[in-house]
Image 1 (cartoon, rainbow, N blue to C red):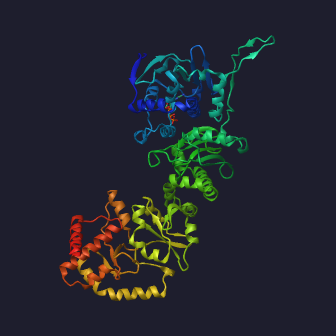
Image 2 (tube, protein in one colour):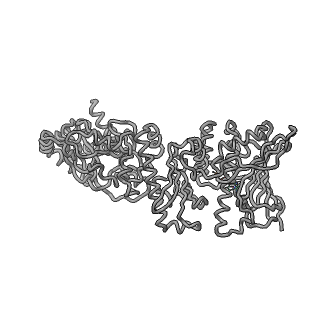
Image 3 (cartoon, protein in one colour):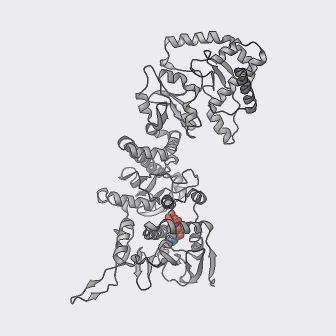
Amino acid sequence: MSIATETLGFQTEVKQLLQLMIHSLYSNKEIFLRELISNASDAADKLRFEAIAKPELYENDGELKIRVTLDKDARTVTIADNGIGMSRAEAIEHLGTIAKSGTRAFFDSLTGDAKQDTNLIGQFGVGFYSAFIVADKVVVESRRAGLPASEGVRWESEGQGEFSVSAIDKPGRGTEIVLHLKAGEDDFLDEWRVKSIVRKYSDHISIPIEMKKGNSYGENGEVIVSDEFEAVNQASALWTRSKNEIDDEQYKEFYKHVAHDFTEPLAWSHARVEGRQEYTELLYIPSRAPFDLYDRERKQGIKLYVRRVFIMEDAEKLMPHYLRFVRGVIDSNDLPLNVSREILQESRDIDTIRAGCVKKVLGVLEDLSANQTEKYATFWKEFGQVLKEGVGEDFANKERIAKLLRFATTSSDEQTVSLADYVARMKEGQDKIYYITADTPAAARHSPHLEVFRKKGVEVLLLTDRVDEWMVAHLTEFDGKALVSVAKGALDLGGLEDEADKAAQQQAEEAARPVIAKLKEALGDKVAEVRATARLTDSPACLVNPEHGMSAHLERLLKSAGQAVPVSRPTLEINPEHPLLARLAAENESERIGELAAVLFDQALLAEGGKLDDPAGFVKRVNALLLEMSR
Ligand SMILES: Nc1ncnc2c1ncn2[C@@H]1O[C@H](COP(=O)(O)OP(=O)(O)OP(=O)(O)O)[C@@H](O)[C@H]1O
């Protein structure tokens, strides 16, 4: 029983994509060939994979290939493959919708700026729909491997709002895509031109891409029209070739194919590894983060092959989460062909391969950071926050990752300072690496906690990325030096503290005793303690959390993520030298002391980015003080 022709509407996102693509990719029309050839090659990969368990799918036609034919009279370009093919239902689903996760986010990220959107589209992968850049009608005929010839499908569309599908007989398995060229696109009927495009973009495709042989001349000068086909590409998987046979352009082209990213990669690693496991890896560091870098659902990234047969695309088993931006291919010589996700999960062999590949990637990053500072800065801007996750995630490589980190500090606005740089610049007597965490660079930079460090000329790391709290929880030391928060615990200047500091501290404590008593009484259980500090030079007071407790910043992060946070009481540290404290010391009326104490506490909380319990009360008190001043 065959179903008659049905006409269906494209998913809204497809319509949007078609519109965008037709208008913004006009300068790079030829990429449609790359996209369609890439799909055909994927279809061959899928067939090879399914045929491991079901060899009958080859239907006695095991020579996988792609054919590109040009018909000048009909003005068509046809791309045909004998890969896995599509059933009717698959054609409807795959050629009418965009199934990718993050599609919405992608559309939201478009700017309307043609140049930038072209890049974004490249990143998203326009794939099949790119046919409509040059064609005003596309006809797809396909049959899925294993289905009878009578269950072929014809899909047809003019790229507007809808497409139609009907049943056809299709003896040969696979997919044939016929592009009816738009007026003015006759360039793509030129044999020589198309061959050169195929070579330019698709040379690395591992199966032959065949085109008609050029005409030749007979003995009497007559034109001999050839019916034979010949491969126009090298037809060997790029990663299997030896390094010195591959130039940079070819590496970059292959990157577009595996990563679906039009931009140039920053760097790559290509190696044949021998040892407990034999495998080839070709791994790339992109130059730009994909829009779904933080999408936990994203599974793509690394393609696993076993002896040149594509097995699966998976990110998690082949690369740790903190290297999820890496793209490329791993081709194992030893894994069984029938390896499944479940087997991978348990496989020690895959662990070995993964560990080896992580080392390669870290090696590439180390090389960039040492020799190509500008590229490394790009890398850091795009992926630094993700790499920081590695400090807690990859114990074995923690040291190497720590060396790759870059920070903003009190002497550098940009995240360019390595921990090694920091250590090299440490003051005499300094034995710790100091940092502060805050919501924003400005909040960090102006925190009262930094005052004494500024006075002593000691550099402090400014940590303002969301992942930083998590990172410092795992990175407790570097090069034998403890990482210490300047906002937690009592001020610990270690070897930086001199006799004068100690004496000053003691004196301050003595002098501050009466005022501390007043504050304690006024603030009650809002604070765990009140104490004098040498931490402050300009500010009257600041809040500190217990040394082993959460930082106030982390508390806020957790609260904003909706998590229950144990109530912790901060310690109020005061600067007895400050006029406000002197004022408080001189005050004897308990109501006034209460008001002043409340203002002191609230402004300390505000200064470190905290939220007031009673903002209106604070404003009222400050206004009262201002009025008093102006009297
Ligand atoms: N030649 C083909 N043979 C079999 N299936 C195909 C072929 N071309 C496309 N498809 C199917 O249509 C789907 C959509 O193709 P499309 O190129 O739009 O996206 P994609 O290939 O999934 O993503 P990308 O373009 O980013 O690689 C493919 O995933 C595949 O299932």
